[in-house]
Image (cartoon, rainbow, N blue to C red; front, top):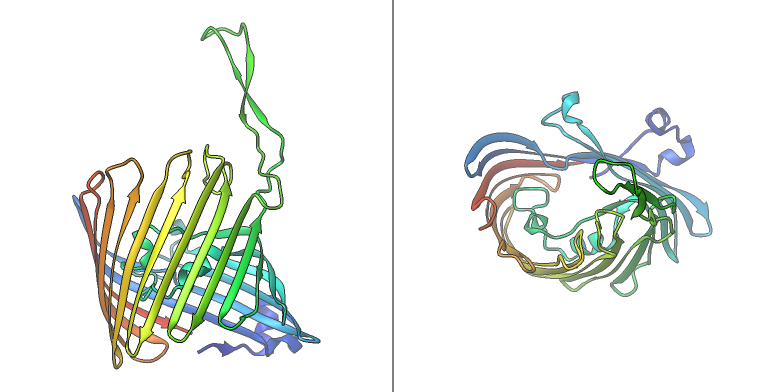
Length: 345
């Protein structure tokens, strides 16, 4: 349950006027696990902070159904707080406008494709050792995102975002000498056209549906070769589809992803996963399985996870979870066992 900040606290933290304080909320999550890690051949025990965070969000009524919105969210490592471990990290931060026509925002934000992945409803124990994304699904939180999210239309929502690369557009060159070791016959070779200088060097799209126990998320995004890890490939593309269905105390779901030109042209992969959750009063059982299959390679990754948990309240839960991953080319097998606690506020 979110807590309202009093006007004096808001003025001290974000210098907001008292009139806005009633619409400003402090929120966060503390998620810590005690883990046994078998990373063959090395084994150890760790205490992990799993995407623990704190944030401030709010809005101001501008009249005629229009609102100004903002959000500042930071990750905080509550298990390793020393300066050397960089305990504070940037998460989402943006400002925008919202009305009956939808929401427009600019800043650092999850891409629509990532939002669609989570909207499919298959990540039942997020940020744990059995988080669904550990199978290999793509998630991007983009800097400099400019996004639009539609209002809910009979259960459907659409979203789109563009991301400028913010490069100069001026190509760089490298001087090549021939023969080696001399300065004769010097010539220049273009090595980087530094071309990500447009308004939409990357873009992401999503279609989301929720209603009647069914959740569906479809996402598609493109990154240029010199932006967001695209490497030498002209365009790095990814599309995902996922869905879940809840009937009574049970939920089942699946996700699929196809990604092309990862870093270099022709480096492709597919990822799929299945997940299920059963609730028994305040207790629950979660299970998932998935595979990541790079094209033209033998290193298919298989990952299995299972967890059980107990909810003390809507805000506090504890769990035990086990994950095993097999990769025949790299480390043959890795496994993790975790005892965790999650508290949201």
